[in-house]
Figure 1: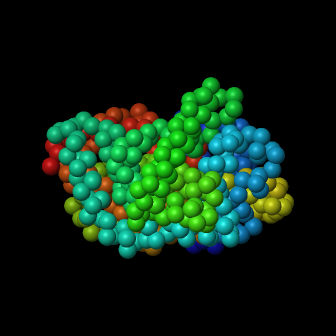
Figure 2: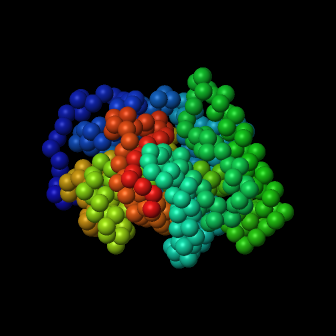
Figure 3: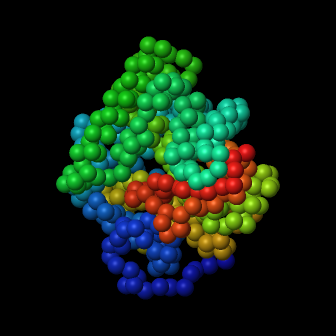
Length: 420
């Protein structure tokens, strides 16, 4: 099926308006709902648990177009009062102090800020660091039980990305050891009346204090690393203090949790397809292509963050009011049969594979090369050093995180024959 061939029409009335994106069945397997939405049309009004209503883009062609649509801006100032009233974004002053990073900037400011980080995540530099990443992965596997069971989130997937990130950005070991993974949950919307709001705000204050410690350390003990260069850019007035803190916030949060989640979703896909797992374990040369397919098949970045039109605009036949939030479903786009033949099949030989797991356009993930390297190293190390790897719980007992934008698991209990 080519991209131009239409799918059979489906009555839009079979879907509620707005479509609720919430609940355990949805988080465990959103793909049947995304299929219905794609077939009914490229744009739908949706409802999130926080009460936020947004416009969701689902098909590949529509998603690719929206990600490259310069009418859609990312800065929160574009949001209208309806969005702002329920968006559950960070309270002040933290919103102004931590939410002016790259994901929420538009050109030309986005261009100049992004330039400060790209060299540190270049494919060439990541390749140079690969031996160190392998040492870190092997050390974590060495600490696992000699034989199963083990939790691969707690024992590996939640630790490896932080250790790798510390190497890449220059986060000192003592500071890395003090990072609380729970701080990453501040990106999950918690409304002002939610019972979890006090804990959310406590995490927010903890993370903000930690960022201040990182900045103070780098100002006193600067080195040739990304964190030091960002602090120097602030001292040269190329960045405001709020932009500096926000960029460190983005590095710490976006540089860890999504990779943790992508390792777990990739492992779950392989554990559900033992024949594919065995093939990948026995043929390391398949890894680069397999990682691309695993990224397409179940992406940790399920949905993008907000985008906004600055005036009432047409979006693939739907009129979207100015300041309403527009969100792209990367997972729905990556399972579009008009772009990917037999999209619900895990095909490690799939080529070409133009998935959108890292987004597209000017907001394409700057850490994509790093994430790809981490996934290749993590999968190769776990599959080869833990023979007989299998799920230690029933598939339906896997605990999927309730995050709005991402996919992953809190725990991944596995068994294996022995640790090599």
